[in-house]
Amino acid sequence: MRRLQQEALQYHHRYICLFQLEEFDAVLRDTERNLKVFDFVQQHAGTEELAWALQQFRPQLLMMRIRARGALALKANHYDQVLQLVDSGLEELRQFYREHERTDLMEQSGEIQSLESWLQEIQAKRPRTARERLESALNEAVKNEDYEKAAQVRDALRNLQTEN
Image 1 (spheres, one colour):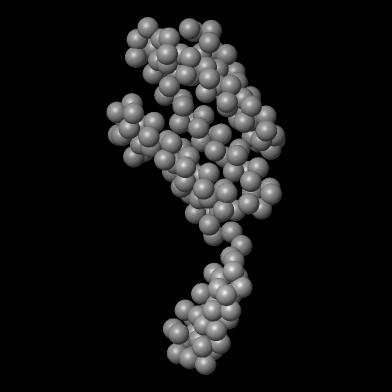
Image 2 (image 1 turned 45 degrees about the vertical axis):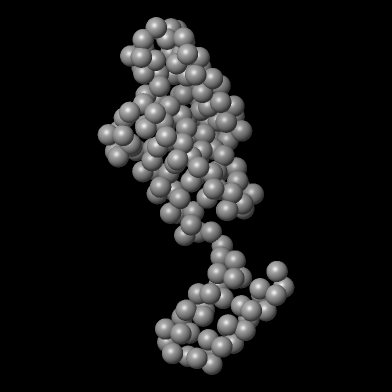
């Protein structure tokens, strides 16, 4: 079991380096491989303590996999896909802590904090759709009591709806 843990650690170091080199496909390959090792150890470990010795690193592994998938989607400008990946990844991390009855660790998880921060960053940088731009302009016009402009923007929004 010890050799398997050492090997998993070597893969861990490698996918960290590969992530820095932006070799995201290789990161996915190595994280998927380590997930299989973690599952194998969980299934065949003699004790829960022995299994936890490796399982405790699963959150970082999951985070790296999510970041690699997200980075690939960002390269293709698929912002909505990235947002969905990160949301589902956050839920997967939270579920891990719940399953292992370690909700105390969930609250201070650096992996969850990192992904939440990245999610906010992506949301801020994501190009807005025509609908979002018009809705923002409408809110701004109403806020400034520019009702003529608000009516024009409202009509543009309606036209956008009929086109879709």
